[in-house]
Image (cartoon, rainbow, N blue to C red; front, side, top):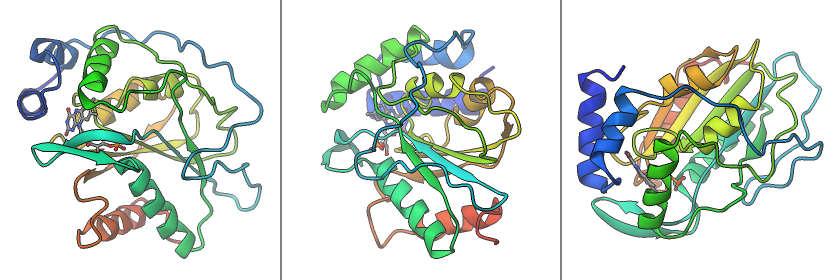
Length: 246
Ligand SMILES: Cc1cc2nc3c(=O)[nH]c(=O)nc-3n(C[C@H](O)[C@H](O)[C@H](O)COP(=O)(O)O)c2cc1C
């Protein structure tokens, strides 16, 4: 595991972002540990309302059902070599863009925002440190608002930032609490330098029974910029994966 391209992206991310121990990052890249069962994810019958984007009750209309699940962390973050303070996380901004595009096309999409039971710090460095140890430990950080079920969905968009070249480990907590049989999973991420990083490989391992479909990656710094091409790139991706055709 972990070809030269992966190693280059880990090195680049480690150097540019100061993402903790480079040795740990390389170890995580080249010898991923076996997944362990999710902890603290007892399904709740009534998913709570997400901040920013509302979690909706699954609709029953139509034969094809789409769910978007995402995690995003506002606060201090990496920004073009420096730092910025994000009032709304980049992945949440991208999520809103995606759901707006789908709504404009008349496509129903239920949305669920993953909330950490132990919220991540507003501090960038503290979050880097916590994420490094969660990756090293192959941890499954508990989710505060577990989703009851994926039943009835056939397309699942899973969004997160890239942390140390991978989705945050809380995405594994989410994915391993569910049966994805019969679904197609499309990862989407926001990032600084790593693109999708290890997202496709991780979700292939974490989403039991899913077919992994094409993913989408947007640079975090560009997502809130209306002059960027992110919205049209997202439209192109949604069209390619067949979500914009009625
Ligand atoms: C703990 C942490 C680790 C990160 N590691 C990487 C990385 O390895 N590669 C990368 O391209 N960006 C990395 N980033 C930058 C984020 O992926 C990027 O800023 C993203 O848009 C943040 O999304 P959010 O605001 O939805 O959390 C990291 C950010 C944090 C907070």
